[in-house]
Image (tube, rainbow, N blue to C red):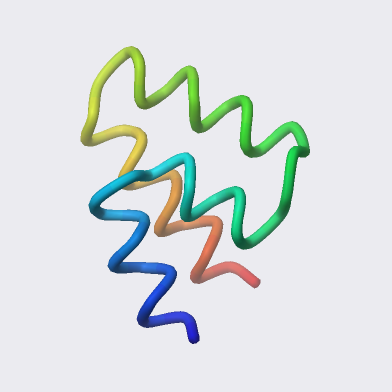
Length: 52
């Protein structure tokens, strides 16, 4: 299941984080990072998915 989440995180980083942690602080941080730059959002999403 983590492989699917990582693929989703590469395409839509906030969705990958949402599937992992829900509507928590990490989700909103990822939205902000994705707005500021697509790659920081991807890196953060993959980190959140790999950490859990």
